[in-house]
Every structure is written in structure tokens, then in C-alpha cells.
Length: 234
Image (cartoon, rainbow, N blue to C red; front, side):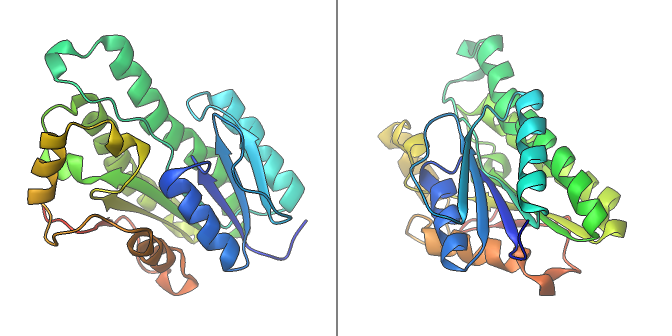
């Protein structure tokens, strides 16, 4: 059990997820992270589990374990995702299904299991991560866009369902961030994305942490069902 607020971050072993885990640890929170691989962070206030968020049974055990060990879940950030890059005509059904399972169903399961804990607390902050690819309908990202579109509309519905219990649900749609996912994109694709940005630079971790901190704040109790777009206008 802990009196410190507990933050759940999926995909916390690298990229944006690791950056968010580090940020909340620096702010004094307890952080429970997960990934498909080994932990890349350590500390008394950091717990790491190796799970596949697309497996609802693993998700159930993980979230239940956090609640049992720490006694609470205050903030959930669904960041884990995969981003295959290919035109729809050459994207297999298996790839599309796998993308939806990780990006949407993983988010769905984490939200469902975490909300059960939050409802008992009468407090919670759920923050789901989306992408500029949705608003801009970027070619070559059909499966990814479909999965993140589902996340965005699901979050709006969840906001209405959980609002009476004091739980807010919001989305942060990221633009270009230097991650392994972006490294897989062709140069011309990255350049096309860059031309769609309001500012001539990529998203930095400080931008993401600022947005997450805003939604996570106790003062943001009247802000829910919103999509905050970082660095672009759709």
C-alpha cells in the first residue's frame, strides 16, 4: 500500500513511454510500467512487468496486481502501440488485426480494468495517446489510423460513462517524435509529415509531459472527452 499517487504507463521501456515514466518518477509518483521486453528503468518507486497489452488476461492480472500491491491507481497513460507502414492494398489482414489488438484493444482492456479501481476511489485520470496520422488521414498508415481513430472515439464514450465517478478521459494526439516507430518511416514520408506541422520542429518530450501533466492535474477535473493535438491542426 502507498500514500503516493500511482501512475500506470504502457510501453514504458523506450521512447515516449519511458520519457513519461521518468517524468512522473522525477515528480515523486509511483510508476507501474510495462512492455513486451525487459525494463530499462529501475528504482524503489518503479515497478515493471513484461506483458502484451493485446492479451486481456495478462492485462487483468497486471492491473489487479498493481491495485493489490499499491492499493490505488490514480493516472493511466495508454502509450503502447505499433505502427506498420504500408498501403492498404498490400496490408495483410493479420497485420491489421495485430495493430488493432495492440493499439485499440490493448487500450480498451487497460482502461476497463483500471476504471474498476478508479470507480472505487471516485477519482482517476485516463490519458490515451493518439497521432496526427488520424486527423491528417495519412496514406500508408491505414491500419494504424483505424486503430487510433477507434481510441479517440472510444475515449469520448468512456468520458461520458466514467464522468459521474470523478474520472476524466482525454486524448493527446502526437505529431512527429523521435522514436523507433518514426525511424521506420521513409524520408519522404517524414518530410510530408513535417510540412503538416504548425512549427518547424518535431515534438519534444517536454511538450508531451506538459500536456500529460495538464490532463493529469487534480485541477483538470472539469476537462474530459477532449483531444489535444500537439503541433498540428487537422
